[in-house]
Image 1 (cartoon, rainbow, N blue to C red):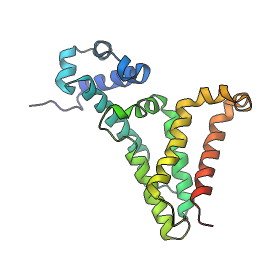
Image 2: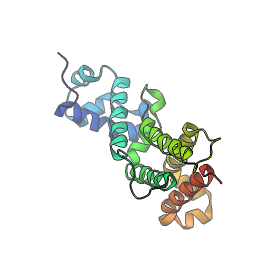
Image 3: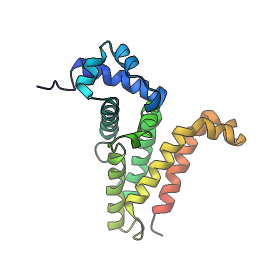
Image 4: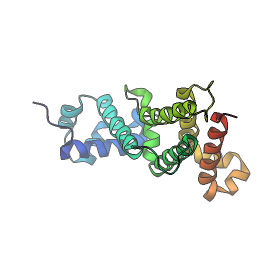
Length: 197
């Protein structure tokens, strides 16, 4: 019988792997280092996860679950769908900004079958579709594409923040406030692009 992946050894392995994968990427991560950091032997790691790719998929699945949990429930604070979209986008950005290791990991998800951004996209799709039903969001808009584009504005920025700040002197000069300014501008850009006129 296979042990549950919620036991303390499996959780330590996943935590160590998350740190290793986010620091070194999939190719650079070493299973030996993960096992050492988790305080287990490699055999136990392979027993639980079968392979390095299986471990990576488990780490991504856990990260996706954290993102989904953080975004669970409808955003409160507005009757209008556009207000709830604004709040949902802000909550997504804030969560991702607070978890830079997760951003790094999630952007490497192409190496697995995981779909870590599905919860965030689904949440926005529901809000956009509701907005279309109420006449507040453009009818010609593809909610899935708009939700994915909104997520890209956030994830790409967070993954490239220091490079963006160094590449544009006015942005670099405002670096302490740049993240908040980016969030506000990205949310405004999405809302202006989806709103029915």
